[in-house]
Image 1 (tube, rainbow, N blue to C red):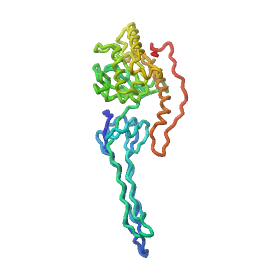
Image 2 (cartoon, helix red, strand yellow):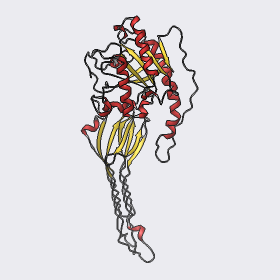
Image 3 (cartoon, one colour):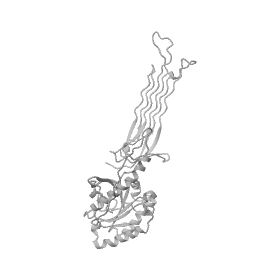
Image 4 (cartoon, rainbow, N blue to C red):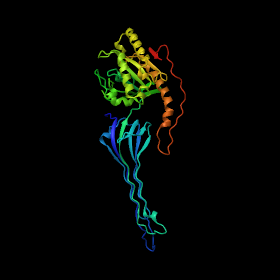
Amino acid sequence: MRFLDDAKIYIRSGDGGGGAASFRREKFIPLGGPDGGDGGHGGSVILVADPHLNTLIDFRYRQHFKAQRGNNGMKQCRAGRSAEDLLVPVPVGTVVRLDSDGSLLCDLVHPGQTFLLAAGGRGGQGNVHYKSSTNRSPHQCQPGEKGRELWVRLELKLLADVGLIGMPNAGKSTLLSVVSAARPRIADYPFTTLVPNLGVVRAGPESSFVMADIPGLVAGASDGHGLGHAFLRHVERCALLVHLVEALPLDGSDPVANLQQIERELAAYSPTLAAKPRWVVLSKCDLMAPEARTPLLKRLRKAISRQLPAWKAAKKANKQWLYALSALSGEGVQSWLMPLAHEVQRIRLQQEPAALQDAPTRAGRAPITADHDERDEYEHGEDEVECIWVP
């Protein structure tokens, strides 16, 4: 299945049916009076967040969605039949904006969440509503209300707990394939990953989270260079970012300089994104001798402690960790997953009450609420993989 995260569609709700202008004509009943029925309501267009969808590719082949109109009213005070609502399923995490001015209409972040995008037109009243003591035979009736039409743009932001970011060929796809059942494309050249990949990571019997592999970022990604600009919005919803730094880059670049470059791009793209908590992982450590890792880890820690622009807003509120592991050999991977899962769980428990409170709902439907038990944070043991905490 191809991945598509942006689509433009046309929406048209149904017109309301017109009211009827008729009179009662029955044997032995003179002066029967008006009996025109009302028209039926037109169908509305409603967006539904479907958890079984993960791409907008279906909107590549169908861009027009039109609801049916209501039936006209009939004699003997019979109302026309109202049209059924048109339900349009979209992936969870879809942002809907007006195409004309880009204004935000809704953000569907919960499975099953609905949004009334275009209400159907109301049915017109029949002439039975216009009778009075001075107008006993009204011939006027009300036409149905026109439906609403608009062009909207759908933007998909993947819902993932952990987002893998870094330079091209940093080992993001390899790490995702090792810790989950996902099978992204892996090769020894840059920009192997052209679309984001999702994988469910199971850190324990009752501990799992979703990890996203984002295409590699390069210098100028915030200005549209490379592939990162088109997919940076997919990490805006992540609870935690994992920044992979290649220990021995193929181009001979400095790992510390690569780290600083990506952090600057995140800050230039969005201050909110730059303020997200993140862990730093020194990847491909199997290519480096154990005695050579310590100086590099110290340099990375020193670079982070200098308060890079992307870390300033999150310094006091978030913990940043520095790990060394190898996805190919498996060194340090399993010991890294458990604290990562607990940190994601802790962040989600803090964010969920606010997210539920701000979640858009339809009229007459209360927001979903849930109670959570407090859980103790994970404590590192002495036998864990070497890590350095950056204050």
